[in-house]
Length: 153
Image (cartoon, rainbow, N blue to C red; front, side, top):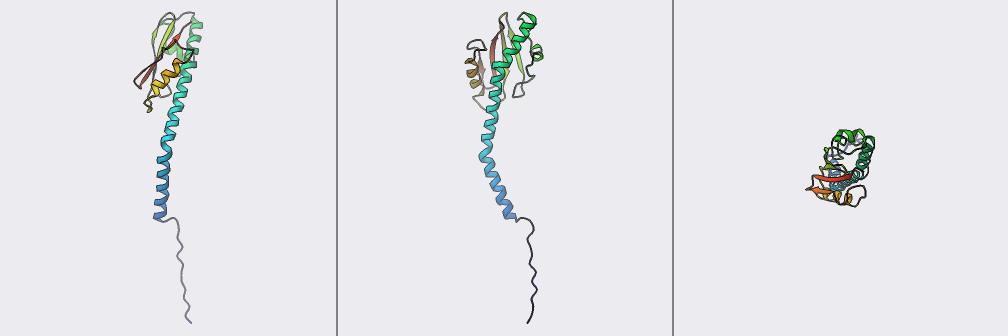
């Protein structure tokens, strides 16, 4: 009787086909979930912008007016409002500006850089329903900027 010694070759690691299948599944899942995650991120930025423009900006303007007892181009500036707690940039990492100041009104431009084509219009609509701004003063310029007026008094 002849004894045969057979060596079993043990597979170490994964085969190329197994790796390709896993990568294919990951690609399909990414293609399915990524648009939803990006949309949720834009929605979150829009919600934060609404909060800033409805609460933070009027609050900073009111604090600055109460400190100086006047509303003018020298007392209401972007630098002075930032000292009262406003962020340097918008939630889209773009600049906001103080466009105009009168004795009873401050106009702010808030720049957007959103992939959502309706973001500026939706933001203006939400702001126009707020009591913290001059009635129906929020306007959208394309999808890149929202201009809104606040009362100084």
